[in-house]
Image (cartoon, rainbow over all chains, first blue to last red; front, side):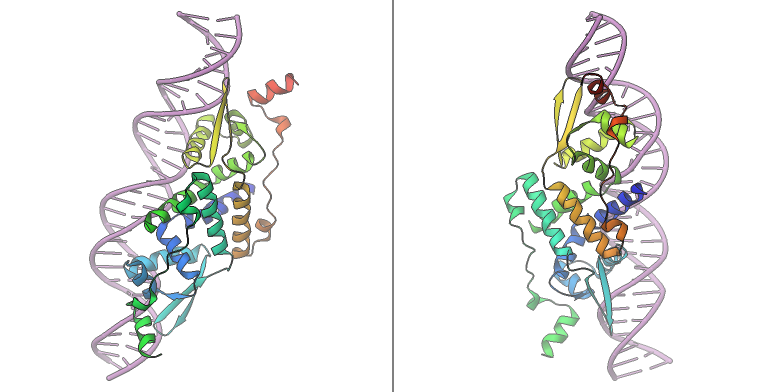
Length: 125
Length: 125
DNA sequence: AGAATATATTCAATTTTATGAATATAAAGG
DNA sequence: CCTTTATATTCATAAAATTGAATATATTCT
């Protein structure tokens, strides 16, 4: 029973153990986003983003909301960004890496996002 | 450069994404321990424990100290237990699991440890 | 030096994960 | 109804992680 608890914890960390998934979580920390938006910001194929989103959702880290053709994803819990930041601080101390210590999630330029949802919003202000 | 930062974070989480490694870290949170002690408490083969320790050390999570035949491992940083606890809380909230919310690392009965180091200490108080 | 013992490493086999490519699904609009 | 379009899924392959077995290393003791 203790063993299975550790297995769940390990699964949780596994879901976080991927650079693209971490990037997605950091973006979602700024608010919900649709698949095409994430694909545009990260410059990755839509199908690939969908795969990672499915995994994050399976892990319970994100939820989704449908609106017409779009599917908007958001963090399942508001504590997640704090956990990620704590982990980064911990890693920074462990490795003595100042860059990591002062790491802040990159600020993507939303105004140049080429995703359909963004483009539609821009033309209909 | 941001990409490589995310890769390092992912590697860090990967090191944590394993039930046995998490168990080891929880034990080390209570103080340093030698390989035979860990093997005895967790009832796993010595070679297997050594493998996991090597991985944790490579990830920078633990350090080691040699003393005679024994090698004592300890946490590389005092914040690690807190991070693990935060992660558990986060997972507990996400999954709504009360058991996990109130999870405390199991208390192993050190007095019945059959490892040579412990046995030697018991006979030489 | 040789034996005993705690720990580390290497190797191989299995399983899991990552990822690209292709395709399916579902909603909206004409 | 048919087309378009955003998203999801399936499949195949490559890469990586897991783990058992065997063996190597290093330290202590006689």
